Picture 1 (tube, helix red, strand yellow):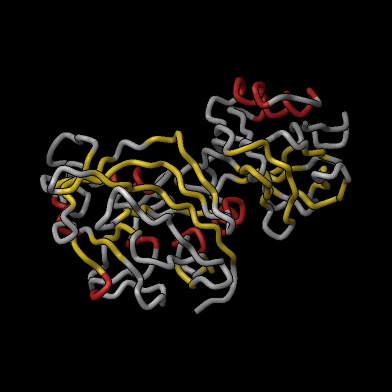
Picture 2 (cartoon, rainbow, N blue to C red):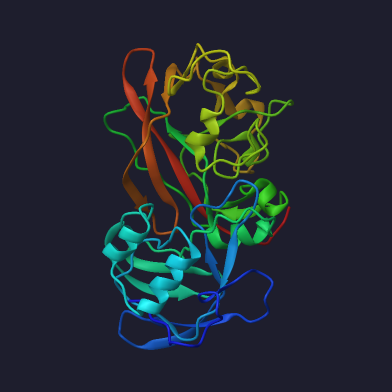
Length: 347
């Protein structure tokens, strides 16, 4: 349940643009029913433009967050956001009706707690992030603040194993025992962040190495913070890779109709690599990269399913599953891995 006292917010529907010095005061209902006051600083868009962060500052006194909101909440306009707030209570079905892009619940109903420093809701038995207000304003904004709201960012990951029928589960370290990596690219001025890291090489990131044949940042991978050949970010790793479907190797010229897959007919195919960071230094050396032909991968299917999502104990989310096809006709998994991360600790 979300609730707002009648006249505590500004006249624009309880939302202010970034830069206002007055943070909102929120209230979080803990699983045991007790209440702790917290600072709820930001409401973030689930549909940020490729040109801007599109943040809005929440400005609601005593914003209670109930235990049964376990999906991102969004709305297609500020007026609808205002309607939700003034309604004082609403259900998940109301949110879905007002905002078709609301994400489905993950796992069991979430018992909600909040981490003030992260501006991210944490959950037990489910997934919940910050409250989202759709904002289609494309004015420039602080993209580092954009990353603050997300607190997760993705690259595409491919499962590579000799025993496809009995794969090892993906195993990631804690963030504390992970690596520093430039996961956010230009969204964070190429400052590295601390993320969990792979503890076996059965899962490898899909890479497009730089001119030196190496991987140093998300711009050599495929994720939501990858700058594509069009100079824009993508919504996810598949969208970043799809910018090369039917195009020249540099992604600048359309050579054929996109067919929803990357295969040997696409010039980018020969340039793609799979990366396993064997020395755990957060840098993809040539010796750690193999091409798709050597990996015996014939194609990558760009059509993914949103029906599956799983969060590990470190806050990393595996979602948007699709398949890669091998030369022998067998299939294996590819997915977007949304790493949780921590700022600070530059190289």
